[in-house]
Image 1 (cartoon, protein in one colour):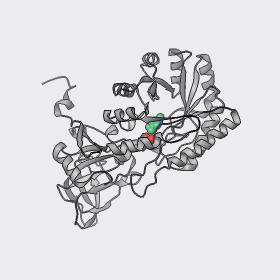
Image 2 (cartoon, rainbow, N blue to C red):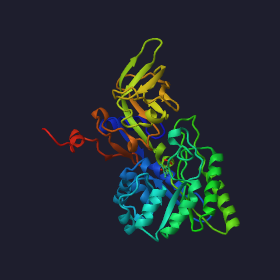
Image 3 (cartoon, protein in one colour):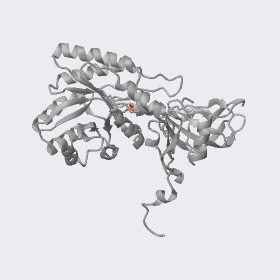
Amino acid sequence: MPFLTASQAAEVRERFGTPCYVYDRAALERTARRLLALKAPYGFTLRYAMKANPSREILVLFRDLGLHVDASSDWEVARARRAGFAPARIQLGAQMPSTRLAEHIRDGVLLNACSLHQLEAIGRAAPGHSIAVRMNPGLGSGSTKRTNTGGPSASFGIWHEYLDDVKSLAARHRLTLRTLHTHIGSGTDPDVWQRVTRMTLDLAEQLPDVAVVNLGGGFKVGRMPEEPTADLDDVAAHVRRELDAFRARHGRSLHLEIEPGTYLVAQAGAVVATCIDVVDTGKDGYLFAKLDTGMTEVTRPSLYGAQHPIDVMATGREAAEVVFVGPCCESGDILTPAPGDPEGLGPRWVSRPRVGDLVIVGGAGAYCAAMSTINYNSYPQAPEVMLDPDGTLRLVRRRQSLDQMLENELGPS
Ligand SMILES: *Cc1c(COP(=O)(O)O)cnc(C)c1O
């Protein structure tokens, strides 16, 4: 495993039980510093898309390193503020129209209009305000349809052909469109990045007040050794050239923003689990290892057919081809689906597991704790632990108790 030794994993189980999320503080800090060092010719802002992992520990670490935040809901804005982010460092871009526009405007939270309806609502609430607008440039990327957030099959942002409506709504409410935002999904294809940068700048050309372009997140991280990882230096070098060319053509210097989620946190998280049963379905069937973790902590495989590395902490065993499944009474609770196909099975060659083995699911820093199906089968929400750079394991969120799971229920006793 990249960051947990066998003895650290054993310590996690002994002190906090399994399943348990563990985050690697040194890796979080290293990745954030690397991205902060990216160069843009006319200024650069790094926003953390906090929906990837809104743990307070991670938010506070990134706040102290100087990152800004991309919030996907009013709730995330509130969470970022509780973690101490200044309102001016938070940009809200949501699917759900904000119900707290007046408050955000008063406090200086930045607003990103993600539909014409939202643009109109912001214009009514804050005439004369300076805002961001999210456009769908007409092209997407991403490994599956479900992680693709641009192009005609994505509902996110304002379709690029409606730019005239954007302009007339903005003019009617005297809004200044200061930031142009696009976010097209989790891809690695440099060609797609180049085309989207170009399309975004073509839109910027038509919006004379735009001083900031935000190219979103979606920088792919290969969690499995065979999967590619986006080369950010390459992306940045290309974007620099485009921004220089834009300035040469139009005399405007554009400040660059990016807002990765995955890239900042994915590899810095793991789930420590226990093998709770081993069963098979005969000689033409499969060998299954059941873990005490599954869709309740790592939902991405059942949702997208996403691949996470799985290590059985055992040495000197024969190898076996194993399908890993979770503990829910639910046939979709599979940790090793076929790649990109949540309905298929993708057995892995690993040390043949036995009941009681420690098992580590890697690549679990992004969209795992944040996107879990907690409390299905009434399993409690798993705890979170920080591995500090000195090797200390520190509990940062307790395991949920039965009382907490039930505390909002009313009715017969
Ligand atoms: C989810 C999201 C991101 C982050 O995407 P990653 O694939 O995690 O990098 C960035 N911007 C917006 C608007 C998002 O919705």
